[in-house]
Length: 132
Image (cartoon, rainbow, N blue to C red; front, side, top):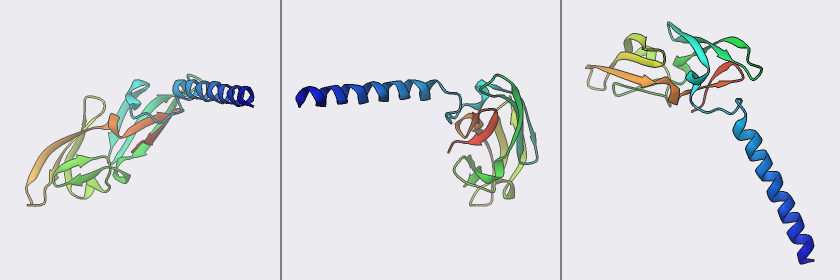
């Protein structure tokens, strides 16, 4: 009985290790670092667009509406929010993946702020997706 248990345990352990290795090496896992394999980032209004590499290596034209998950928390851009465009002005990309803006704080003052979009967005098989 103990030998049967050990054999089943070892088999399950090997299967779990194999699945972990497959999933860890898969580019479809939503790791927040889209800039590793996306190029030509552009911002138009609240829409970020880029060409992102798929699992086959092909470049896919993709876009994502930042207003869906990016918000303004007391003058600071945050990933876990929404509707930043209602209270942020002069919005632009700085470099390729840093969103900068002047956002209204709770006291009414404008605060110059930025957000590293790599902590909010991933590339899932060529498509930009929120990972927060």
